Each structure stands twice: as structure tokens, then as C-alpha cells.
Image (cartoon, helix red, strand yellow):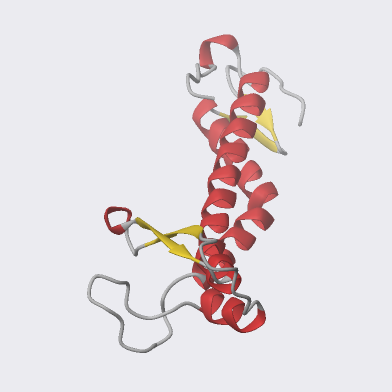
Length: 153
């Protein structure tokens, strides 16, 4: 964190002079996003690998058409069936409105269907970390009258 100086009611941050409190907020935001970007790239790759882009056999009505790279690859690499009656839950559906639980007894299907959810969890975690860092840094640097009261984190 850079030093903060009072320059006629403005801030000095990151080598920038005469920065307003709004500009200070955005400078801190850009810095926080750039520090966390490596997590976002991983999460985006997981989410994208789980999109049903590959053509597949005809499926029963009501199911999501196509299959994903994650599902196809994990079914090939982890083709293990659990004993009869041993089922694992997976979330399927293209939109939040279409989400439902599907039960599978194949390890590859379980992993392939859950890879995008790991990506979404990482994305939400990265967003939370970015916002937390922005809040902490901004409120440390800003004068009391410019500080933002954050209620949810």
C-alpha cells in the first residue's frame, strides 16, 4: 500500500497524484482484480470445460443436449462404476431454472458434471476476495468521511 497524503483534499496512491476518493476506489479495485486474476483464469477454464458444446447421442426429452469436454474426458479417464445402489448426486441443467439433481454411479460422470461447479465456487470465492481486499485497502487509505460502510462482508 502506498502512503496517503493530503494534497488539497485529494489522495496520492500508486504513483498517482491529486486522486479523488472515487478515483482512489477504482485504483484500488483495479489493483485487487489484477492480484486475483490467476484464480479467475482457473475458474473460467473449469466453467467453460463444463459447457455442453460437444455433440452426443440422442438423449431423452428434458435433458441438456450435448456433452462437455470435462464430462467426455472424465468418463474416458475415470470409467469406474460403483456397486449397485451406490449413487452420487450431480447438478445438471443449462440455466438456474433448469437445475436439478441427477444421480449417477459412474465416477467419471460424477467428476465431469461437477467440474463446472468447482469453477463457479472458485469464481465466487475470487469475487469475494477481491471485494474484501478493496474494502480493507480503501477504508485504510480513505479519510473517515470518504470511507464506505460495507454491510455484507
